[in-house]
Image 1 (spheres, rainbow, N blue to C red):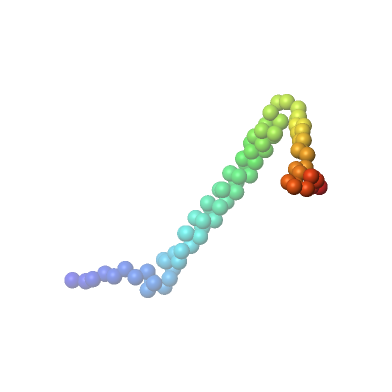
Image 2: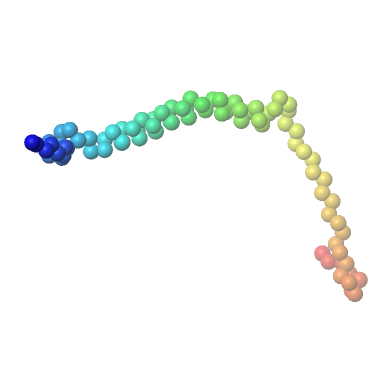
Length: 81
């Protein structure tokens, strides 16, 4: 009766991957993400343009601010500046 032990390190190292598959997989995921982002840029730009324009000319709002008169100091009869 024989016992077979599977030790990839003893086979000369030619059959062990050494983690190369993980690195190749990570590189492929990054490349796919970059391609998806680059291809979606025109759509994102159009959506931002639609949000800023909304089909009407840009209207600059007018803000009216009226400051109250300076409060008087009790007991002196003068106002602060």
